[in-house]
Image 1 (cartoon, rainbow, N blue to C red):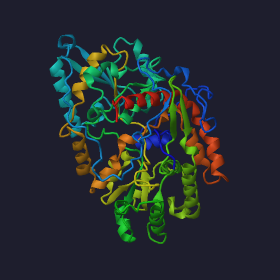
Image 2: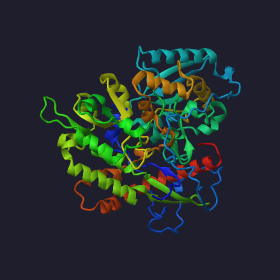
Image 3: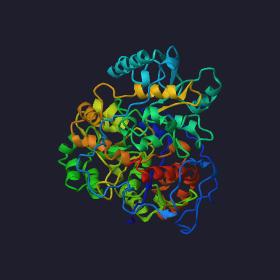
Image 4: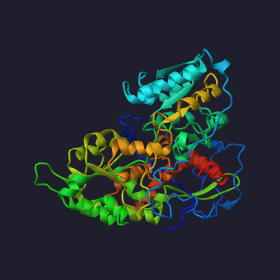
Length: 546
């Protein structure tokens, strides 16, 4: 398998897949911004071509793009580690920060009213349900900040619909639009940043870095989570990663029923993983060894939607959705679609063969490939595996099931990440805020660690004590999260995955199907992903991000 230079996961799910991840939100798709497909050449077709970034990508003018040279060859930018994790890297803890912002302008802020726009109910501060411990901790924090600055903080609710971004844009003409925007699901909020500086409704957070300490990864989440609010190479949002359950999580994992494992006398997947024996064959053997159609409650091997299985199988091949070859001095980039690689097609062929030969073990043979509630039969004890979202595991399975475990979808090796980010929690400053620096001071003080959570390690302990019975469960929930990538789903680049998923079982040639499908995502890559990729690589080469 060829060496990966830099990976960016672009596999994008249907809108309904976001429902599972967001716990009930139903954002509609947005049309992708169109751009000329000739502006960035696929190097598989023309390896020598000098491709260019679309004109509206708006790369920051104060950043120098690396000279005409290949990216580093030492593997430092690879998404897949060369060594198997030993359990010590569940999440990166960068240690305490000694950062202190400049003296706040108390005189300017005293007596002022600041408004937080959120898509949650007004009475649920920053998304925490009323009468919960978390909500009380947040209210205590708000009281502290109000007292410190002599100001008042209010919440206003904005319905999280397809019109969310449009309504945010309309607030620029209001007398008092809002000073912070908070979202527990930023897919719709992302639409407010457009293609970058030329049409973003959000403030470039690096302009207030002297106040919020943007590079504090413990406090504001890893760089991947920030990419969910990045456009045109500019960061417009961060994640309050030291607040309960706000730590960015990998997307879909497999959850398995330990009771059924014991009932059918099967090996535990986590033990197989520790023995370095967790691979496709081992996973398929477990799926096909757990079946009972004669009992009062039918039992089968796996419940999952086709979209999610295609995504998991594809990423488990070790390839990325988009592979970057060379960044040129003018900002243009050579890139190829990872889904079109031989490794990806082979992995998809394995999935097709498995689903065809062992149909009854998947979704009980009913071919309900558009089932977005795969966890429901799992909760009924009817299936060994369910491929589902972290939010479902935390909010449903951990509450209703007392004997389960987590494991990654088996791939080419233990480190083949099958997850990526759809969306996460975000805090942003709108351009119509009374004063961006005032908003930044509020951000700095509001989003310090909450309750017992002061470090990233504290957050790991919280997950372990609250939801799971195994340290490995936490590991598979958080494993290498900083190395996963954002999907760019809200920008409409999920057509390739849809097409492959729809025709996987009926296509006579997966190679032909894939080659016909991947070009439909080209505009999204050119318009949204390429300018961000260039800027992220600049930051990496300058040592600002891992």
